[in-house]
Image (cartoon, rainbow, N blue to C red; front, side):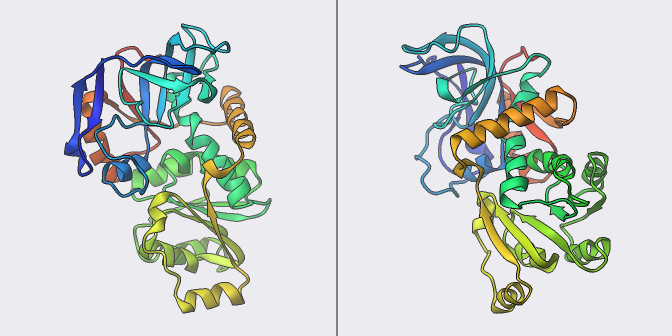
Length: 331
């Protein structure tokens, strides 16, 4: 089979397509013919060696795979050959023509959903709903600021915030095209959050009060500016691995949070109990199948184009779910 391999931590040029032996499913595992794999921002950080605890290269990256079961390992009774499924791969390996996944982390793809849609629903849609419900504790009447609102997680958050009762959804996006997409998905206001004055635009849109919930994932100056957009008694929710650098809170910012009774919340979707995650996943699948949740599949690349996909995502030229097609068949 062909597989994309990361030879060493570094730039996109370290990703190379290689021939490898097909994997064999062990006990409690299934073998997938991978038709499509998902690409997430965290994988760019893994490639660059910026996430601690990742085993050293060489390895085949990729955590999300969608395809057809080719074989099942010993002890697997809930799955059979030929089923269309989507799976999480805790040890990576999705960016290949074949991959092995734990049977417990495999989910059947409902009729009417494509491989690409299922990839978006596997991780990003549940993350979006959990962020709003458990991280931000969004309540009816809240004004909510969502960064990267045209991205994989953000495009779902814009839609789901209104379903949870948010009165005002304020979207942050880096280009006019992305801001138009956020507005089409249901945002009330879209601002360019690459500009220093975006907190003022958020305050203007909320009558000077600010957003009741501000979600933040970038760190650095964006983190500091986000606090300026937060309303009294608001919740400032930090998520995503990139937020772990450059987020020191100054004495002035800490004073603001104390005197305005604001909360600083850290949130990670994988930290939720598995039964809660399973319930959230079922909910977003049901919403999508019933036509109540739109899946935005953005750019699609071939397996050999993975370095280009990394460059496009780094340059903020992608929107929605970024998909890597690992097979010529995708339906």
